[in-house]
Image 1 (cartoon, rainbow, N blue to C red):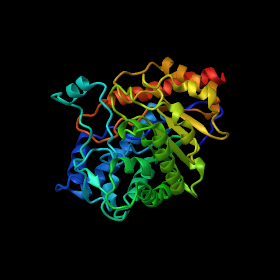
Image 2: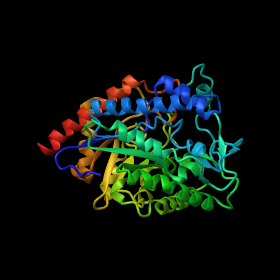
Image 3: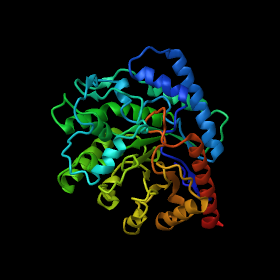
Image 4: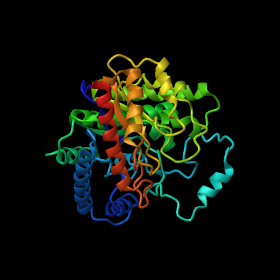
Length: 388
């Protein structure tokens, strides 16, 4: 990743809103319905071209394919990796030692809405019931599509997201391996191929690891010590998968779950930042703009970013249709630059705008574009203040 010495670069977390016709195709493909494979692949290719050009035109310096070929940012692996043929009929998240809901009225109201935002088109809830092996190395097609889309487009770099072993272990239960640790390392062993292919293609590999923060509230660990122990194990498994990949080709994304809810049960960044910094990555993408975590820039007053590392704080939100003012964005960038060094900051987004393909996305594509333009203008203003 580039350490720019003259301006702040911009990027985002990866998942973007899929075009409506592609959403319909994804629903057919990933729910076992009849579909035209050639038409699907052609539409993915054209959609990636459109998306990359739109990102560049909005002022994004480090672009991606928007994960447009995938129905969801992590569970898509069940269509590519053999061993996930089972069906999870239990809770969505493993280890549901549920705490009391602090807002039961809100939860009941949200779930009863006539037109709730769809979380995605993928209906099947997979379960691991056999050894994990590659069935379809579709990441090779994703890589080829992004390479083709970059032709004639002027950007600084390109990245491609891939899920951490921990987020898959958290979302897809294990009914085959003898322990959670054995399952997690099996995931790491398989995912290593995808990681290496992305880095070898010349792209920045982004590891999506929401589990590092959100597992505390979703999996409801009894104590912070047990949660940290599980997170430590998942981090070591991830580092095992990243072995041999240069750190400067890796960035690591952490968030507290891309959902609009109270988030009063979120673990504090201060309680996990030491584990985050153990990941073998050059850059750390951390949610920082939403009202529940906007204050956590203060963590970096006490925690030193290791030499040679970079920070990509979220300086715009991914959950609301508010378009941030560029001066607000600039203020946040300048704040982080003052803490970790201007050359070590990339201006980012809290999370993806389309973590699950949906016919009714949370954020309208026009607003995504406007947010990207506010991000780019905010970075321009911050660069002017920081360098000139």
